[in-house]
Length: 262
Ligand code: ADP
Image 1 (cartoon, rainbow, N blue to C red):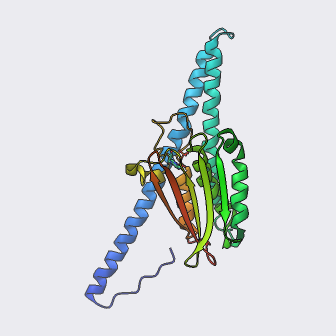
Image 2 (image 1 turned 90 degrees about the vertical axis):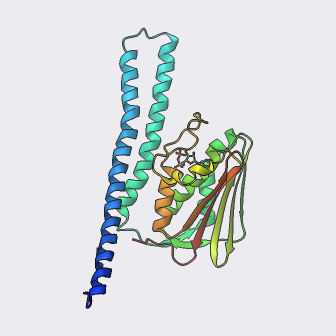
Image 3 (image 1 turned 120 degrees about the vertical axis):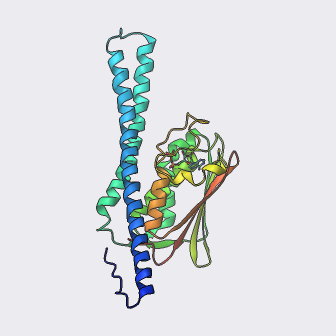
């Protein structure tokens, strides 16, 4: 910390000073606690599928190879490996950022192209779910920021909109300018998030619809990554959602500065 606290001249200044120091210490302790919790949650999330895969394979190796159970269990293991892959991808997004953040230099990021690229990345799922995917931009929008982090933010939000949409649903991305800010709205008319979970969805590994929709796979890391990156880039970010009606994510960029706020 480079912060310098001026030396107090009077008693009440001493009091203010000790309050400032205490509140700083509390914030540091909270951050350390969150980091510890994250590491322990992450190792649990990684170990559980590995234990399941190992146990399943150990049982399987003792069985005859041509029965139905054999095939079912192998498929089960493949699904668990897919899940691990997703988890490792997202943990790497975080780790890559932690490693590189000293070297990040702001660059011109062309938002319209970022949105189109991310939509294309999701085209397989958009087609297979027969979604009506819309993208509208009033103009060409550029911001001064970090391309990788901005792409990661859009990847997580747009893939959620697609993933939590019902078959034949609609996903729309709308870019415009309001009050000198570039505004991006990503909306879907999918399964929505219940009101009581609207805050918890930003916590690492928290999944809101996993019991109601066990077929929709995820790690619970996407929105916590978005929250972390938007905060660091000084991008406003919030979610509006209603269960069974749909979800809208709103991002607000400053044109000049969306660089790192360390
Ligand atoms: P996940 O990998 O589970 O999708 P996220 O961190 O991206 O993790 O999202 C956390 C939870 O928020 C999800 O499990 C889901 O319950 C809910 N969620 C996120 N986006 C949407 C959306 N567009 N529609 C409905 N639910 C969503």
